[in-house]
Amino acid sequence: MTNLILDAIKFLYQGYSEKQRKDATATHLRQAVLREISLNLEIIKEANNLQSTEPDKSKKLVENTELDAFKAVEALGIPIEIIFGGKTWSNDSAHAKQFQKGKFKQYTENIKMISDLIERTYHRLRIHQLRVKLGIEKRQPSTEYLEALLLESKEAIRSMTPANK
Image (cartoon, rainbow, N blue to C red; front, side, top):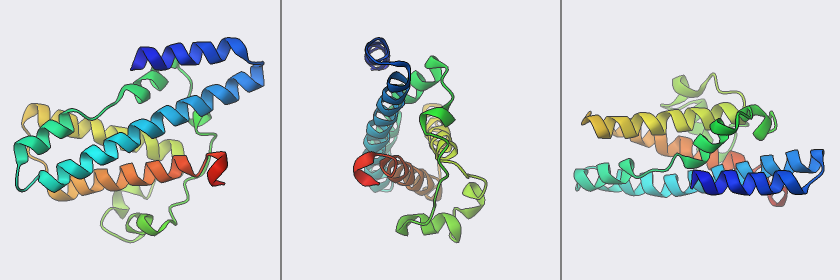
């Protein structure tokens, strides 16, 4: 998937003026990250549902979460702040209230930008993958936190698309 993303970006880069090219590249990267986060959200939801009844299947699901789009962003060397337009994270959505007052507040109180939220989400996703790989048991609140981060990241990226403004 990483090569497909890079090839598409190269194509876009060759066909547009400098500003259009930069805007199109950032949009394409945001869309790729959004698709990947949406997929990972569904996988983690399913893993959370199976965690108590079928822990082995839950672990396999976590192992198969995707990081390709985020790795492609890193490989391009474009600062993630540019891709996400330096937009401030507005954690005032209904499901984000848990970040303001709830059990996850201490983990997210320093997140100010959408790019910070995306990075934190991928950081936690990678930690979950490593825990499964190394056989480290994770607590339910940890996977709930990851699910909440994925959901909020998805909503934050969607808020940046023209159709949702």
